[in-house]
Image 1 (cartoon, rainbow, N blue to C red):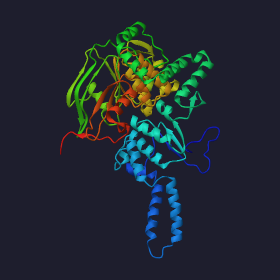
Image 2 (image 1 turned 180 degrees about the vertical axis):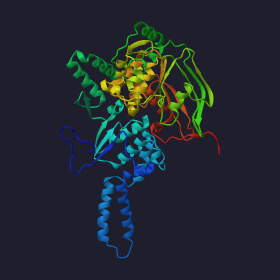
Image 3 (image 1 turned 90 degrees about the vertical axis):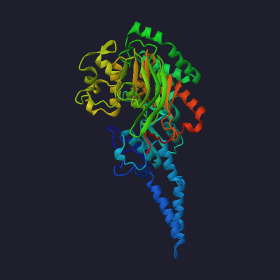
Image 4 (image 1 turned 180 degrees about the horizontal axis):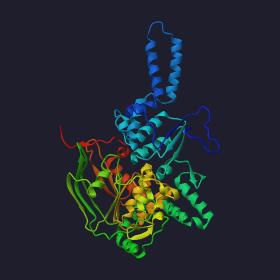
Length: 509
């Protein structure tokens, strides 16, 4: 993209080709609205269409140079046809809807980081450069928006180079995968499933030192090859194995310091969480209305839905940080909750992230197990000097991993995890999945990572708001794949398409 220069070698774009890039923190025109920024991506096309219409008017005037005007009009029509841009306003509206961009008249100075990225991605896709460079394009997108993006990129006429840890995205879109491992680039032709097979073969050739990684790859491959019915059977088997898993955890109490491990908490009783007819809103917006569910022992619930529909609010209600407007929420007597608010303000920004987790101690208590603090921090992707980074300068992804480390350290038997999969590399994601599957307890996880939800979720709590019923949630037993099939069966094919989020008003004018 020409933003940086390599220390060695050379990277250059062939003459005549255009390149566009989506950065983690993309620049926007702060003086313009959401719509104004998105329209910048098609500014040249708008000018051509405007000139085409002007020529039509000029040709109606006396003394018009028909030959010159027709020649210019022909060139403009050819360019607009090539860009398939006669319905550009409709394309723009569809893209903004699909990516759930904020309202077009909102100033970008008021947007969150995730909203800014969606606006920037929308602008870039409409721009249609020959080479798209996308840095974590699925971050801050819900499942329906990611599905739309996959379909859009699969039909994209140019080349796409994406940095991503979204494994379904890689499986559905990628034709080549380039893995960066210890400073070297390993290319694999094919999608993510093919990459798993070829990498496992490479690990086996390299010998015993990579046996652990090869074993993990084999487990993931086994899951990939299983059909939907087999995956659902495993999900149900987990629910029936609580006593067995709890007893095994108490017998062993061994932690692998190189992997994310979730220590067992106190044994759960029969009641974990019973929610009946919950209602919660803010100001004039109703976020949750009439929600009921019962969380079983050993359940892993994936909470899905667009930003701003009340997922984090539900967590804060469970832990008592927010009060319900109606309904009843019963938390079992044996439940010990592990939860860290994503917007923690009590972390000393001058402390290193190792100090934040360890309080400066070489050994820390992780649940009921003592372990080396640096090894524990390392399991969350903070290696060597990274552990000395000050908390005040951490990136969003690093803060997310820090929150995950602080949450799992608490040793609860009910985990409330808010977007734990954001900005985790594939190995750390796989480690977290395995840790959750081995955990003898319950977890409620807000995530947009479909692969993660398919592997670990026993239940899905999904936002299904519509214009008629904008505060509707649906409780489903099964993983994400099963839920999606059920949703289309219940609501029809259009239910899988993204749509703008609206909220019911709490009071009438």
